Image 1: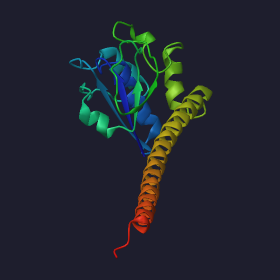
Image 2: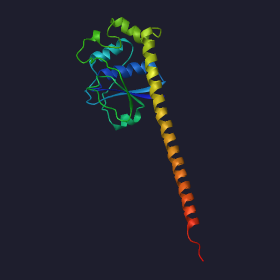
Image 3: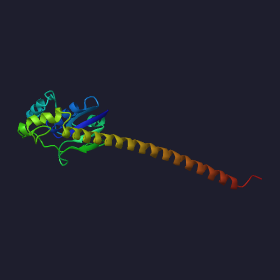
Image 4: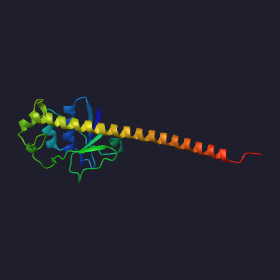
Length: 191
């Protein structure tokens, strides 16, 4: 199970939509949280309403601050804002989904598919056969797989480096013992 942390500035719009939509799509397969570098007081009303239209309740969302505990919890961070304003996530694999800020947008332009009508937004998330949703799932699953693969690659690399260091130390110790033994053979013998 991968733990995904959705990150933005206020944790009131983009990251809330991404977290709640991801939870609905991923079910029990992955865990999700969202945070912001400068949390707002509450989620944007149009975000809560747009998510309600597609059957996702975000009325209980409380914006949270990005902190060390959140970073330690996460396996993967997804920044949902432009890279120039999104907070950094040191020590956590990060991917970027640049989503428009819903703060000052009308309801019709907020949600998982703001290019279509509101009924089509519902179909995008609720309809499992919808090609765009399947592409989103595939892209996300590939991103998660790549992130998990990257973590495994780093772990294997660390183990290999530790083994090489151990083996190298053993070889150096053996060479030193041989040299000392040879040096001992050359020392003058007591008469």
